[in-house]
Amino acid sequence: MRDHFIERLIDLALDEDLGSAGDVTSDALVPAASRGRAELWAKEEMTLSGLHVFAQVFHRLDPSVQVELVLGDGERTGKRELVAKLEGPLRVLLGGERTALNLVQRLSGIATMTANAVAAIKHVKGTKLQILDTRKTTPGLRGLSKAAVRHGGGTNHRVGLFDGVLIKDNHIAAVGGSVREALLRARKNAPRLVKIEIEVTSLEQLDEAIDAGADIVMLDNMDDAQVSAAVKRANGRCELEVSGGVTLERLPVLAKLGVDFVSMGALTHSARAMDLSLEIVAAKEAPRVKPRR
Image 1 (cartoon, rainbow, N blue to C red):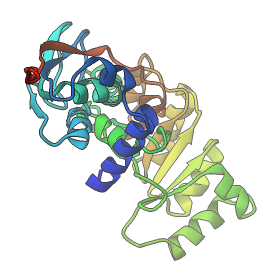
Image 2: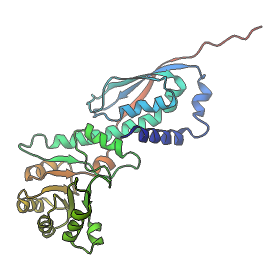
Image 3: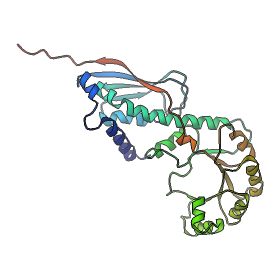
């Protein structure tokens, strides 16, 4: 994700939290010159993601804040483990706490859920299955969410509408309901450097898509028996992706059936926030200057 996108995201998040008045509680309690140290702790097992943007939140408020990452993105934590150490103006540590935690908790949730999905097929012998994400992301968080999927061991599907052709059911409806016509138009008018993928809901549409030259066919909401039949019909002539109704429990079955990809919207729209906390461990007020008599 480009740095200026991250900066815009952080600025927006800080603005909604601090508003025009700032952190009125910290400003009332903590002298402006006070400094402190804080620690970021993981309080359950997880796969980490978002640590650099966590640090950037504090740097955006005050570049002098020092952040030492004890662990890195993609690393697995224990049930209680130190993740990062911070030192800087106490007001800044308190003012950036919630925004920074919101990001790292959310992104670590995505990475953890992805890691669990990858682990579910790890012991299936000979599988070629890759776990993909989707565009079902929180607005503004797509780049970071897709990075979190990678940190969890997953693979990114297209980033947006600009970097891949994926013909969905509404696209097919828009050209009169013909799978073949949709693929012919895509092949003629789309950029030549990308593969053409199309979504189908029946084995008959699969046959039509293969005959029309689809590179990848997405099997939408098909049960295991239909997926098995689709693999046999395709017989290696195109890559197959399963989407819809995919759970952790189902992943080993799909891996054994021989599909190439499984896309899981849940990775980025349903992952829970992980339990991380920022704890102030030392606070030092600036010495008070005695008034002259």
